[in-house]
Amino acid sequence: MKIHFHGAAQTVTGSQHLLEINGHRLLLECGLFQGRRKDTYERNRHFHFEPATLDAVLLSHAHIDHSGNLPHLTKQGYEGPIYATKATAHLANIMLLDSGHIQEYDAAYLNKKLARQGKPLVEPLYTQLDAAHVAHHFVGMPYDQPFEVVPGVTARFVEAGHILGSAAIVLDIEEKGRTFRLWFSGDIGRRDMPLLRDPVLPSETDYLLMECTYGDKPHRDPQQAFEEFREVVMRTVARGGRIIVPAFAVGRTQELVYCLHQMIDNGDIPRIPVYVDSPLAVNATDIFRAHREVFDSETHDFIRNDVHHSALGADLVTYTRSVEESKAINERSGPMVIISASGMAETGRILHHLKNNIENPLNTILIVSWQAPHTLGRRLAERAEEVKIFGKVYKRKAEVATIGGLSAHAGQSLLVEYAAAVKERVKKVFLVHGEARGALPLMERLKEIGISEVYFPPEHTSFEI
Image: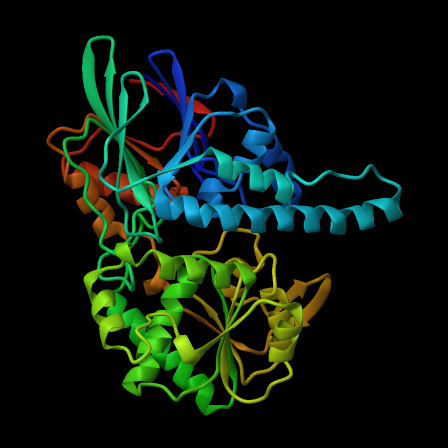
């Protein structure tokens, strides 16, 4: 078997891992690379393999950095199945349609500039129609049910605890008279997080392909993050300001709404307006409600005891779809929470909320997730005094607060525990979906517990096992 690391190798986005087994080719993930805009278009346009030669794709979860290049893959000739959990297939459909809209919008915006400069125009990476075609390829599978992917390869999805429907992908392989197990972690979640079940640790694994986003540090206790969130809300409300939260439409938005719902129910914060201003987040929330079967036991208890039998706001939260509703939010006065996409503040309605609120010292911009280099979210997290939004420079007068403990990714302690679960058997561990600052400290920790064969493969390199 050969593993080719074509994405999320020594970086955090654009996951693509190509496996060659028994003359067949399997792709784990097909994500969009995210970073400098001038780099991303060309990088995402070109695959380092022929899509038509793939036999199957397996998808761990619906986040765009794992699924977002699937429309381009099918556009370039891939015709086979895309296996995922049922909730992931459901979520990915709406996320890819939204991504197609963004691709079209960005291309149109760029073409206006290129046309004025007399330069060649660009095509969108893919369109909403291209994204719609992906739905025909999805094969939704239950958790923990083995299925044959290609001859000699049996797959199974197990709970990853990262977002709704997220899974590790377990491959039991028979090749040239030997049998072995490859366990791909996908993105590993955390224990005791809102809504979701805890991640399942690997077992009986020979080769572990594992994420390492936060391999350099442990996360604070989720309860501490909950309390910090409450404190940010309270001090901003006390000065009459707004809390503006760039948040991923899927996963983080629903967790924040659940936490705010709990705070208001418990009387921890005043009953202030909460707005979820993202059509994708609204649609995703509907899908969360449709897949209660994957919620954890605490969430089921909360739903049973809530007056509206809801975990995601009910009458406490206003979900906005239209542009008119979005604009109306900024005409309202008084304290409020505005949660809007995108999570790295690169596109979407969050940009309008930031430009309207960033120069008011009463307000708070709350950063609740990792921010990729060269994004507006990263510049805000680093508390830049000036930022550019829609080509105009704004002086940042709003407070910036960061809460790392809300991350949906495992911290160093759980990553070490994850690998340690198979240390008596595992032959090689490959660290992906992380920068060097996360991978190198984790490699040292794994060696300390007796796992010596740990690799951090560069992009487009291959290993034969």
